[in-house]
Image (spheres, rainbow, N blue to C red):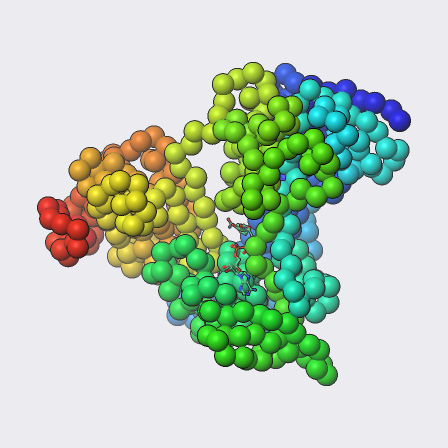
Length: 483
Ligand code: NAD
């Protein structure tokens, strides 16, 4: 068996791994990147990027459908699914091709195949050709996660889809049951609803999008209802059977048995880490009770030559978190004093309206972190730009520390919220006070003005909303005016 030697080897070419390999090369390391599938991981091949292509297309269909309100008269839009899939595939090809170009341009060697550790400083790569041994003093494991399957719903691509099948949009079923009202269920369920499916969501917990501001979630669910959807919470899917030409999903909703006839089932009940088959356990790499790899703030595992980043190193399972962790691990391997030290980790949900959160998301979280919170809120319904583009739904809510006026977090729900959150993330990372944002001149008419107005509202100084005195708080006194 041939042996290859590198300074560092990254296993898994998703947004964690491919970024880590580039950073290693930038820092002068002879690096290799191993993956058994296409470059780009879940994110580029069947997650973030293709789903956003579909979401944008479905939004366009929806905009056309509702354009009459602005005097644009068109008939019911028709969707050529094959053409849409072709477009989505082109998007994926362009982005994964870009990753290949960047790896090559940075001098990273890409090795195709399945990697398995045979010692703490060597792996075997069983690729398309002959098996090879790859040795290095440092490895970064970035193998990501894979969809959890639940009993009674084996993903077969025919009746039952995971996100992977759903983003390939084999058809637009007349009736779709989406099991799991998490991010994937809500994003892809919305796509299919806008393309014409009647979607029934089954969520086990009392609210879809658990952990998100209930007011933002209400806007999303309120928008879905007229699009032929049904949302069941406190609902557990138990199994399904094929009856004639249809499927019947059996579930328990609020403790009562129900049967839901449908044509396809999408299972999106979370991801689990992909650790199996890597040969990590015999080396003594410690896992957390939930099966993620235990790491220190430089992403080093319990075995000093092995680092782990991204989904496999624990939640939240976000591409940009993985990328940042990849940079940190690469820098640590290159001898830099790099550790996890971010203030702000934004997250975005591409529902309609979009929802994005950064920093502390609620007053309760702020109290738990030892702050007396002050809240400022601004509605997109009062903003010129959002009204003019016919997307007045939603709000920006900021949380600050009442005494110091330090900005602590923001929840944005509305048009382009997932883009707008970048300003709030920058403000938090820079240690901004509410005044810093309030004093920053924002171009008019633009959507980011809503963030500025929310910060002003927290100071009792909103211009385009009335600053009403805060309602008395349970905990005590001394509340200044706020919108
Ligand atoms: P998720 O954890 O976001 O949601 C899964 C949902 O399924 C939960 O609400 C859970 O209560 C529910 N559930 C679990 N078992 C169930 C059952 N038997 N019946 C009914 N409901 C059940 O997981 P996901 O949506 O599959 O996404 C996977 C991961 O990918 C998440 O960690 C997510 O953060 C990440 N992701 C992020 C983005 C983004 O940032 N825009 C997009 C997609 C996915």
